[in-house]
Image (cartoon, rainbow, N blue to C red; front, side, top):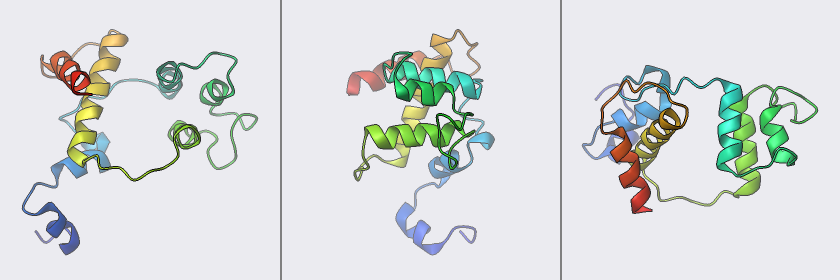
Length: 139
């Protein structure tokens, strides 16, 4: 109670701060396994998810995220900032009604898909594949 600001405690309304902490401190989250993807592979996954061809400018930004020839000085070398820039260009910011819990659920789905797609060993619960299937069916 004393570790969290009063405004956050009021927002939580008796709920757990754990879902927010999972997002803020992903390296310390033992509940969601790490994908094991290196930065370069993250760029490949995003390019495939966006359906980009190899000669597309956005594809080149993602594949060459360390090159100042493709990315500005504020983002070069940081794949997460390059992805953010790409997504802001493609989907301008609009207010969202998605909850922290839904973001966590979708991150779990993403981990399950990446593991399935790249043949990674499953170190978490056996129902991950059914989780992502049910989440995708909701949409």
